[in-house]
Length: 469
Image (cartoon, rainbow, N blue to C red; front, side, top):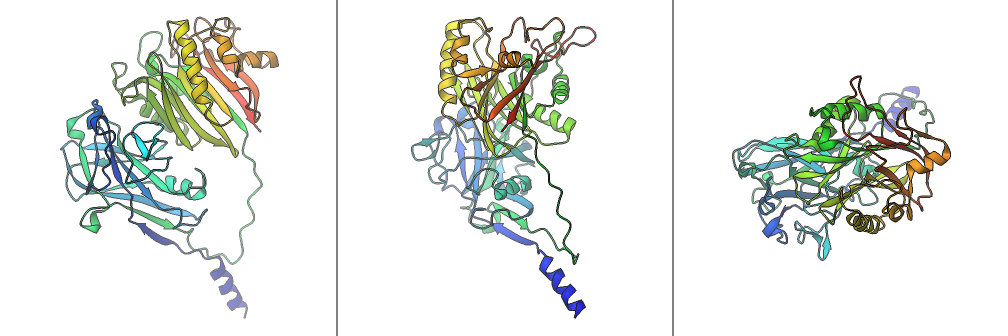
């Protein structure tokens, strides 16, 4: 009788693993330029390509139903997206799998629109965090696998909201090349074995203990949010002219931010000639041992060029960007901190004209105002507190440094007691007057000089600390 009871106890605590295969991919190709309003959902192939000419850029978009097929909160052991190469040009390419945070209609989606009459926040799909990469050749029949376990886990947990569909955008982030063109079989392919498939293993395995484990200790997550703003001087050109992005990353880790705004980031330009957004994310991951999510946008909207970068320890709920007048841009990321929605922005205003900056401030406030509280806007605003532009921002947003001065928690260093980030105080972290769930703790401008007086950038970094109520 005792043995029977023990066996029943074991059976009651066993959780079998189950493999679920989802082969309805709802896939289509997004293509820019002259094809920006063309829908490719009936094609038998999907495509990726990197190009400096928008007409040749392609991205492959997928949606798998993990909403109705998997119960919310189900443990996910693994999730693999498998696509089959149909052909393409010969260069081996690294393809990235991004979370696509925004819903779309497969039969309508184009480079510009996600649904009929509804545009993407960002042309070519609203890419959020990158979750996997894989190398792709042009050898037909090759199976390419992307390990998207972390993405599906987050989707099924409900990290991205009530809609629990897994949406993936495959992007070639490499440099422009005709030979980057790749084809993959779509869900319209004649041979079902070549169609895209998401294979998910659910369940937490079999437990052999007859007694439940003790309850976990009660813990609370910190409500502190550390925000870093830093103009990097073209991604890490030190004040002695040496290109050293690793030094920027080292300082970022030292300042321990949760979310970061970086200005003057370059993607495949003469400044560094590399993908600086991806490089910084990789550097931070290597130095901290954790995933960093990032969103970059160039000042022209092109895939390459100078722009602003957001890096975050928190997964992105959504991301977007908006071009401003006079070749400027603002980047946005939504994160969730202790159950609170934080909308974070990074921008860099015109460096030469006060009237240009006033126009851009109006555009920044108007666009950011379309996002919910709590709102934080960071960036190099290129004006000092006494300038004519200042009231245009301070009328709706608190200047973190100035507020920290009032609290007695503004920290600088000898020789820079005023918190100047360059020749004056031109870098800001602003938080909206209506951000009632953000409580300012402190602000600090860091002295990044080495023994020879060399700094990682010609700007000093500013860190703002808030409590999220």
